[in-house]
Every structure is written in C-alpha cells, then in structure tokens.
Amino acid sequence: MYPKSPLDWNKLLHSGNRIFIGSNAAVPNGLINNLIENSQNLHDIEAVHIFAMGENAWARKEHRDLFKINSLFISPGIRDAVADGYADYTPCFLSEIPSLFQEQILSLDAALVTLSPPDEYGYCSMGTSVDIVSAAIRSAGKVIAQINPCMPRTCGHSFIHIDEVDAWMEIEEPIPELKPPKIDPITEQIAQYVSMLIEDGATLQLGIGKIPDAVLKYLSNHHDLGVYTEMMSDGVMDLMKKGVINNRNKTFHQGKTITTFCMGTKKLYDFVDGNPHVEFHPSEHVNAPRNIARNDNMVSINSAIEVDLTGQVVADSVGYRFYSGIGGQVDFIRGAAMSKGGKPIIALPSTAKYGSISKIVPFITEGGGVVTSRGDVHYVVTEYGIATLRGKSIRERALELIQIAHPNFREQLLSEVRKHYWVPSYQKQKPVPVPELGPVALKKMKFGGKKYNLRPLQPADERLLQEFFYSHNKETLMMRYSHHPKQMSREKASTLVAVDQNQDLALCIVKRKGPKDEIEAVGRYYYIEQNNSAEAAFVVREMHQGKGMAQALLDQMISVAKKRNIAKMCAYVRAENKPMLKVFERHHFVRTASETPREVSLELDLTINYEEQGVVELIQPASVA
Image 1 (tube, one colour):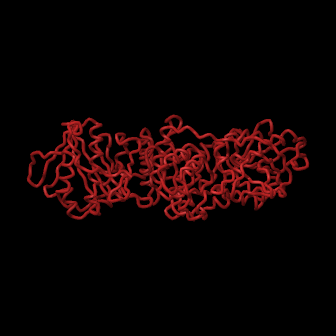
Image 2: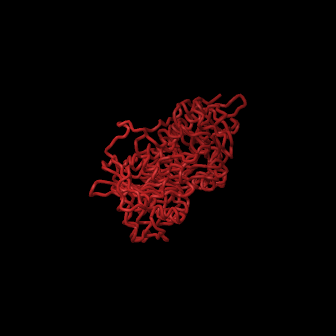
Image 3: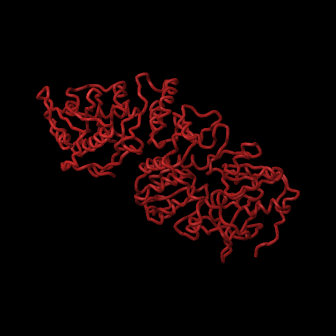
C-alpha cells in the first residue's frame, strides 16, 4: 500500500518553501533523511518546528543550503545552530503557534509528520504528538507522512484520514526515548517542597526535566490527583497505575488524563497505545489559559534559568545565548493563576555551575529575556524552601527570594537590594537556614484535625509577625511579656524575625491561606553563651491554645539545642499560666528558685537522655501530616 521507492521531492516541494517538521518524539527522521538524500535542485527550504528529538539531521552545517531553520522552541540538536547564527529562534506562546499557521503569518507549504498506520476505516493517529502537529496538518498546503508501525495509536483528537495525506512512505523506526533522569539530592529537596504545595484532589501540569520527574515521585501518598498538561511523562504513567492519578476530581475533562504530547520510555508509548484514559488534544485547546483555568486547584510546575529579586523569570536564554523557548510556561502559569485554588509554581536549583553562580539574582543577566513576568509568579521554590510572591511588595518579594537563595549568596543579594532602597536600614539580618531541622525544614503537622506547617521564622515574615501580635488579647500579652505592649512597629518586628539562626532559634507554626501564611504560634530560644544555655519562650494564637502547638515547637527546639550541644534550657513563666507550666513540665523541666512569686523558673538538663533512664514520655506529640 505504501510507496517503497523514494518520494519525488522535486514535485512535492519547491525551493524557498516553508515546511513544518513534526514535534517531540514524533519527528519524521526517516522522512527527513529521505528528503536530504533526494533533494537535488532544492534550496532554502525554511524548516519550522518546536522541540525535536532524534538526530536533527536538517540542522547540520552541511545542509545549510537546503534548510533554513526557524525554531519555535530550541532542542539540544538545534542549540548550536542558533548560537552560530545559521538557525533562527522565534519566541512565542505554544497556545498561539497554531494561529501563526492558520492566519498565514507562518504559512506552511507542507507538513512533514509521523503517523501510525491507518486502521480498518482509514484513520491514522498522530501518536505521541498532537500538540501543534494538528494545526500544521490542517494549515499546510500538503501533508507528507512517514507511516511508522512503531507509532502508538493514541486517543483523543489525534486522528487524520489517509485520504487527507498527499504523499507518504512506510519507514519503520523506533520512537525516540527519553530516559528518566538521575535525581540528585538537591532536586529531591526541591521536589519535597513542591509536593508540600500540592493538595489531594489537585490537577497537575508538569514541564520537562528532573524537577517535574522528582515531584511525581513524592506524590505517591497523595490521593485523587488529576492531570491536564502539555507533556506527559513516565512519572504520570506510574502514578496512574498506582491509582494516585485517577482524574475523578477534575472539573474539566473529568476522568481523563489530558495532554498534547508524551515523551519517555517505550513503556510509556505502550501505555498510551489505545488507552482510552489518556487523551491527546491540540495545543490551542490544552494550552489556552481559559481552558486551563476551568480545572479547579490547578497546579502548574515549571522551571527557570534565573529569577530576579522582583520575581521576573528568565526561562529561554542564558544571557544572549538562546537555550530553549517560551513553550507553554506562560500559558499554564496564567491558567493556574486564574484557576479556583490554583497554584503557579516556578521551581529551580538555587545555584548553577557547581554552586559558583546564584540562580536567584539581583537583576537579570544582560541579554536575558523575561518569559514570565513578576506579576504572574505566585511561588518560587528552591532546595532552601518556598518563596510566596503573590500580593507581596518589591521589598517583601526580595526578602522572600533571598531566604531561598543559596546561603553563600544571601549577603550579596541583600547588599544589592539596599542599593535600590527596597529594604530599609533597620533590616539587618539576612536569612539563615536551620540545618538541624533537616534538609527540608518545612514540616507538615496536624492540630485539631487541620493541616499546618512548622518552619523557621524568616526576615520576610515581618508583616506576618505584626499581624500575629495585633491578634492577641490583653491576657495573652500579659502572659508572654508580663505587661501590655501597645505597638509592634516595623522596626521591632524586623528585629524579631531577623534572627541569627546559627546562634538563636525562632520557629513558627503557620496556616497557609491561599498564597499567604498566617502565623498561629511562635517559639524561640535565645542562646546564653556564659553558661551554654538557652532561654525558651512561646506565644500561641488564642483560638489554638491547648491544641499542642507549643508542645510541637518545644520538641523541635529541644532537638536543635541538643544537636548544638547546649547544656541546659531555661524558661520563665507567670505563676498563673498553668497551661504553659504543664507544657514545660511534661518535657521534664524542673522548677528552680525564682526571684519573685509571680514567676516560675524552670530548667531542663539537656545532657540527660530521659529515654535511656526509663522516664516515660508524658506528652502526646503532634501528628505529622
């Protein structure tokens, strides 16, 4: 049925034509090679495409007279050609590329694509890539296909009748595979933080790379997740097989995993072959922000090359060197932002080049271009934590981002910020990590059946601490401060959150409300060098007193103090504060002589291991979510 001899390319194409080359894992490499071998008298054919797996033979220097490349998303095989100047890069949103074809802005004389063999009714499938292939097929003057028996038949809007194909050859070749990347410890920490932002029942979009793959590995204990994504990977397949992804809570395309293309191993290609639970749709449908937003609790996870301290995201270039493309990042960031309960997330390592360069930068590298604007970014995640940017001032954003930068660069970043007056003079302390809490210092906990996070207090919490202070009634203020303070100025709040966590310790329990944290409890100790001791104190929001928050904070504080080889911990509690006295005494604090009957002095010998001595733990620890 299929031609065995080479196609007559001089009849199908003319010099100066513009052709489209199929995308991702559906690049018609065999067809391109046949064109190159039989291209006599053809010159200056413009090849338009996005990410392309495989050998990318058309990008070789020896074929410069035959092909002029216009890449709408740069793949590794095209990167050098763009850098050397014999290939072009056109930045555009993936959702809008189909309109470039349909409106003849990039008119196509031919679309060279890979298709599955036709079924008994004559329908071929676009297989692993529907994305912009669908629009190219509908817009091109001719459709020239490589019929590849290895191409899976995918479901959804992925079919074209053989009668709509102008010329074809059967060329069987394996579908290019994308092997799962090795996950390093930094990527694992980023993935753990990102997974903490994902609630049960959320709908996910994940980009390409190590971080999205690692995030999927940390979602195994989640429930009822959905997928509405540009790209599907092996990780999505694995969670579907486990039942973690079942799409039952989706509010758009319920019950189906929706994607535009897939890239992965042969196991993934076999999984999507004829699978009615996975549907492939065109990019103009899947990537349209208004459609993305129809999914409640939409979580978009994408990466970046660098992020400046105002929240601007560079994702397609390293300085003047173009690296990838805009792709679907902005489509999904905006769609997730419009979604009810949605979370647009940018996740990236804090450094590059083996820790020598910070990826959180005071200003964008010369030549770099903003892909996602500062107004679109809600969350930025590195291995050092989560920065929440939505609704934050420039100064607050800078502090949030500095606290998730690598510690080696925080002082420099704070100094750069001061040059532009984003941080006032009273802000003294750069963020300091608390390594004793473990690589992921954010801990999920439950109190009264509701979820909270325990984490270090940070300089960016200045306003949150003010709000926490003004929520207290007179009784709480008296119990904590032994008087009724009337004001918590910005200067005072800044002093209390700008803690040198290498010496002292300040922890808080927060409730996340959308993109904002609300402080529910604070626990801190001050280190006393003279006698190697630490003085502890707490304050808990009235509505949460008695739920175990102070106990959870004290557990962490004692653990950190012991790891720092502090000899003892002391506390001073008003005599009438019976609940707080019980918290300390349940942790084996003993009463000591006090200077006044209004105040009880307590002390804990941190050198004693109470478990070894057979002392039964008297408190019920907070449950970990």
